[in-house]
Length: 517
Image 1 (cartoon, rainbow, N blue to C red):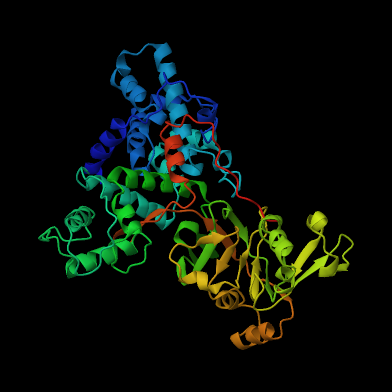
Image 2 (tube, one colour; image 1 turned 30 degrees about the vertical axis):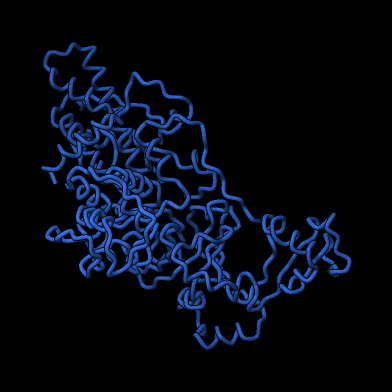
């Protein structure tokens, strides 16, 4: 690992992403710093070991996907090299800069460099608590700078594996490939000049053996390599070379490096303790995992929000499960779907088993329904197979009116790209998830749950155990020796990297998800 540090350092310095004191940042760039730091001046900086440990740690910040110049690395090195010749005034400046850099670094490790709420309006995760001044003081007094810095880093295995992925990426040769441009759809047995370019890309990413002959034939080794590549990019591993596969092949080493860096930052935003028992949804991966004592016990396919109606990022605790839920039509769907559909055909409402209520809670017949005051009514869909929420709804407190639920469009789960909902998370086989969440609730066996669903009567069951739920957003990780990447379905990655690398100059805030209440 140590031998790779100079390589990584050169890469980061080359792209010029450090905090340049001569650069004028506009307001949107200035607000990106996670904390306002008030440096603690300490006589303990007279200890050379303390100074050298901090400088060494800041140099190693590249291994965290951070940028040494954000912590004035060059300035600190310059001070240290001429320390014995410094005046008292310069020593004071140096000590002040050491404290400032130290505080800033541990703050960024603990909560990230960027404040997510300043760029994502629908963000709902509490920040990790940290007292930077106290940590700096104690570290200096106890000569424990490296230990203190290490204690501020996320402990999740995925964070650690992402750091490994960053090192692995740095070891790959320079990426000099040109984009593959083709409209062909290639299958096993095909012959094409494009296949040679595809094989070269697969060799670069270590999916295809370097000993491959690089012929223009789509042969068996290519098929095996291609399926592995497709699988680790969240594509359907069918061995067919289509638009999605070509798009993934055309990502450069630098683009993937940036993707890893932004995902490391996201992990710094999230809670250090996800809970002993928890449910986690990774939006770009379209998967839900149940976790007990750090072990993944079950995995479910999910459907998440579209780019227009994004699923929010949040942490909460599961509160209750509703079997045979009713569904109240939210405003967005009401305006865009239900009202236009009913104007064309009054059966649009009746065919969907929807009951209309006025402001007093009195039922309104479809014959009395008028489009002019349609938005003043409440529309409630009765329980049943055709209910938009399906047979079960799993609730947890949040500010975005979202939840986990079944669906009456179960055919969507066969699709590979499942960014298709209005913001909530639809779960495949949700009754299995409900049974799992009720494992400590006496009597809630598979047969009892099936019986409740069969009679179509709404029933709410309180969750007694403490089960955290986390809806997260990760487009890169490292698993079982393979780099994993997913499509950035909400286009979050590029802007975040620009902000992290001090290159963002726009005033655009990522649009808020359309909230359906």
